[in-house]
Length: 132
Image (cartoon, rainbow, N blue to C red; front, side):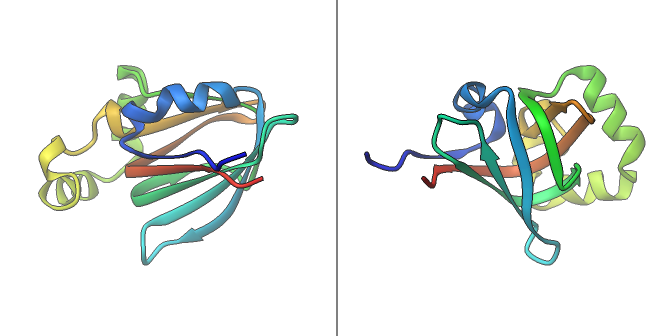
């Protein structure tokens, strides 16, 4: 079976993540210097999936999460993040990697609702690939 791969903004990939609702998520790797996070998603009998977050501006998640549902951010989520993230980071992101997008926008925030709570990744791009 060929490997499925997708990449793009969170908003453009959310439909591909819907098939993984209820999955187990493991934060496999986090590179602060490169702004990269790699998540391993398992939901038998589906293939294991790797999600790579590129140019990650903010990440708030546990290493292991259960029964995860993926969705796009709402206005409430953005308000929560605006209180958590120092404004200088939001402003700097607006000037650099997220300049064409206006900084912190719902279209670039992946929300993960899990048994353990609600978690966020604000990123310029996601890569999704089946790995098994």
